[in-house]
Length: 177
Image 1 (tube, rainbow, N blue to C red):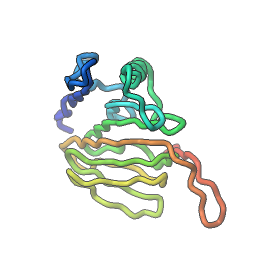
Image 2 (cartoon, rainbow, N blue to C red):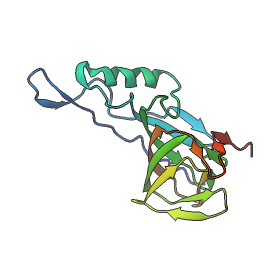
Image 3 (tube, rainbow, N blue to C red):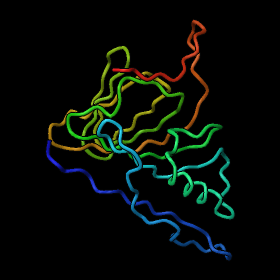
């Protein structure tokens, strides 16, 4: 494996002054630092919001996000908030085993290639610019490249548990393998 780990991405937050003029916030550094590592995959919390509609007055959303950066933030905010995650997957690695989260995710691949495999064995190769709408399904992500890292951005929001046609409620699941 080559060490071509991608650099920290930058996040630019905008604000409004007392007169309603826009400016770039200086409350946080632009660089989004690694928050956790799972099986070699690097996780970064790009932003976090509360339940919609999000209140932007008095910068309460910024304060919430700053607090989340100081702790090990949850994958998803209970009650309907959203997290924006950067996920960097090293070459020839899985970012997680087969799993299901009770979330609605919008995932966009920014660089590299990633294989998305579902519980029925179906798989797709996701390429830069491709988007996946992940609807609380059993899945796993794998970087098939022997040399290049992959980077995805996921907007993750809590959803109601999926109920099958047979009436079974599908909750969170993480394979031990």
